[in-house]
Each structure stands twice: as structure tokens, then as C-alpha cells.
Image (cartoon, rainbow, N blue to C red):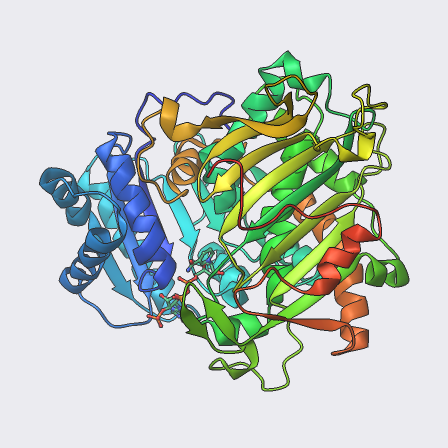
Length: 512
Ligand code: NDP
């Protein structure tokens, strides 16, 4: 059963972490540095070990060297020798193909040896982490089952961590859920979204539900609209093969952006416990309006970057990138206008946008409050009053700010927009983190609060599916191009100007 408390003062349960895809980018760049940070915070148990599994032939020593190099590069801190040694000594490696039953038989032997060795994980708790291409998620679960490696009894647990993307459309997400749930119970499956490991994202819950100040304003009577932005300066680099088959909508929207939306829009849970929080998030996703294809077309914008410059560096056009079709219609930018059909949010648009090769890196949730109903200040019509935005900034800087009108000093009544800023780093020592620390720890203690339920995933794809359908019918028709280093396609601005609204600038923010 999922644990209902979030006691972070204790070490995680003894377990073996089996990482499928251990020679890959995610493992070296994010997972292992996160384990290092957990070890440094003394949150990993004595009975902890990692077995990495992948195709590349490597000995234990070579694997340890590969991960050690990664820690130096990606941990973001000067490594402590004792912690590094503690972690590296716990790593071993198994070379094997994921479609070969022998791989799983050998893995079973390694796990059994660990249990017999009495190294503190005598019960045999195992966390299987699928850091692999999504195409093998379901078959890996089948193989684990056939090899008898999945347990869930009073003595030991087996859990499964699944990376994104979870499916490529509604049908494939349902099928993946079905196959994983044939092997693992829902409370053993942790569908990870590393955005939810970020402090600011979790702080949305604290902001809303630990402060009565804001909650009374949090509804259609006071809020005009919400903007959720995840803007990246990076282009697709060497990931053309993956990206051209995926696109910005699938890659970012049903997971990261919808998770942010659900935290902003959810009703207060009865308690801060996995089942209560997840139930409220699921209700929001289920209340999101799914358009018919025609409306989906008018409420969406897709763009693709052309050549341009970012911070003085030349960026080649998306279609010229390696492993990308020269006539690709894959979007590298998407903007959507969405609604949540419930009592609290009826009629309040949620505008979402995300893209690559943009002017600046910026992730934020901006809540625009309604204008004052009447401007009492002489010569200041209501449409010249600055807008009241509350901005939850996730990157590049974490914090929360409130923008409001203030009087400029002097004998005349003049108003100007000012900002009230809270920056995380001004109040708290923010340790370097990958975003995976909290999530991996939560998997080890069985806390599913920050993970997606099967129903969330399917509800999200239900909303995304009409966009996929109408875009695939339209081919390149409606694909807008934008220069790398710009703000995105012009049609994205029009999506809001049609509603007499504007996006916040990507580059300039209140926290800077
Ligand atoms: P990589 O391509 O770098 O790594 C894939 C890993 O899977 C490699 O270790 C590869 O082994 C192994 N593998 C693939 N097929 C087989 C097979 N048939 N048999 C044995 N091993 C196999 O991918 P990433 O690490 O970038 O991504 C992994 C997952 O994490 C993906 O689902 C991705 O969407 C997700 N993700 C990645 C992020 C990132 O920043 N990298 C961020 C968020 C999610 P080998 O190379 O030895 O053949």
C-alpha cells in the first residue's frame, strides 16, 4: 500500500534499484547524480544497491567508471570522496538484450545472490526503473513477470518506475496501461514526470493550500485567464530521430504542462496524502474540455523553427537537423487554448505554450486577475491599469511574484506596475538538484503523491487526441514557421489577441 506520510527525515527502505537502460543518457546525466545527492543527504539505506542493465558490453568496473565520470560532470557540486565511493561501490552491471529471456534469468540470479548475501536487503525489495526507449516498456514488464521477478507480499515489494512519454496517443496509452497493469498493481506503478520533482512545482500546493489569502481569489470570479509557458532555448540537437516522431505536443503537453495545469486548477484535497492529492488532480484532467476536430484547429497553433541565432550562436533549421525529414511537419512549438469545465473554472481560458529554439529559457505559470471594474484615477482609463499577474516561476529562477499598480511619488496621480518578488534562493539554501531526487526517494518509500495515475494519463490523452487528429489530417497546412531565437510563430500571438489578451514576454520577467 502507498505510504500516506511524507517523512523525509528517515532513510528510504532497503532495496535494489534495477535500471534498464543503464548505459543511456538519462541514467548518467540525471538518475545517478540524483542518487549521489540522496546519498549525500543520508537518505539512502545501507541495504541499497544498483544493478544497471543495457545492451552495451561493460564490466562492473567499466560501468562504475562511466557513472563516476557522469557524477563529476553532472552532479553540480564538488563531490565528497566518501559519498562517491559509497555509491560507486554499490553499482554492478548486466549486459543483455531486453528481448532475451536469458537477461532476466541472469538478473534473477543476481537479485537472489543479493538476498542471500544478507547485505541489508534480505527481504528482496526491488525498484525496476525503465530508463529505456518507450517502445520496450510493455515487453520489459512481461519479461519481468515471466521470469518471476515481480513480487508483492508482506515481506517484500517490487515497484516499477516508467519514464515519459507514456504512450503516443490515447489508444497506445490505454494499451500500455493495460499491459503494465496485467503485471503490476496500480500502487506498484510510478509514472514519473520529473517536473513534479521541482520544489517550485510542489510549492504551488503550499502556496494555494497553506495560505488562505490566495485561495479565496482562486476562481472564475477573480481570475481572467492562466498562461503556462515552458520555453527552451535549446534546439533538438542530436535527438532528431526521437523528436521527429514525437513533436512538442506529445513530448511536453500531456505530461509536464497538464501536470502544472492540474496543480493550479485542482480543488483542495482533504489531506496531503497520495490518494487524496491524486484524486483531485485526476478530476481536473477529466474536467478538461476535449474539442471536436474543427474547434481543436482554431484553438491550437503549431510551429517549427527555421534557422536563426540564439545568444550569438547560429542555429540550423529544424528540417536540416540530423535524422529529421527534409519536409518534416513535426511541430517544435505548440500553443493551445483550453478550458476546464467545472464550477470553479468555467469560461476561464488556460493558454499553454511550449517550444524549442526560442529567445529565452523560461518556465512559468502566470495567473492574470481580472481588471478593476472601474478606474477612479483621473485620466487613467481602466484599460491603462497594469494587469495584476501572479507568476510562479520555475526556471531559470524559482520563485513567486505578484505584479500590481502603485502610485508614482509626486503631486500627480500616476500609476506604474511594480513587482513583489519572492525568490527561493533569498530564503532557502537551494542545493543543486536534478529534480529526480524527491521522486526516486518517493518510489523507495512508496509515496505516489507526485506520480501520474493511469486515469490521469488517459484523461490527458483524451484532451490531446483531437489536436493530433486534426493536425495529421491537415499535413503541413497550418504549420507556422518561426526564426530560431524568436518568440515563436506569429499565430501564437493571434491566438490571444483574438481574445483581446497577450502573452507575457518570454525574455523579460519580474524575477530578473
Ligand atoms: P538513450 O537512448 O540514451 O538510452 C537508452 C538505453 O536503453 C540505453 O542504455 C540502451 O542500451 C538501452 N536499450 C535500448 N534498447 C535496448 C534493448 N533492446 N536491449 C537492451 N538495452 C536497450 O535514452 P535516454 O537515456 O535519453 O532516455 C531513456 C528514457 O528516458 C526515454 O523513455 C526518454 O523518453 C526518457 N527521458 C529521458 C530524458 C533525458 O534527458 N535523457 C529526460 C526525460 C525522460 P545501449 O545504448 O547500451 O544499446
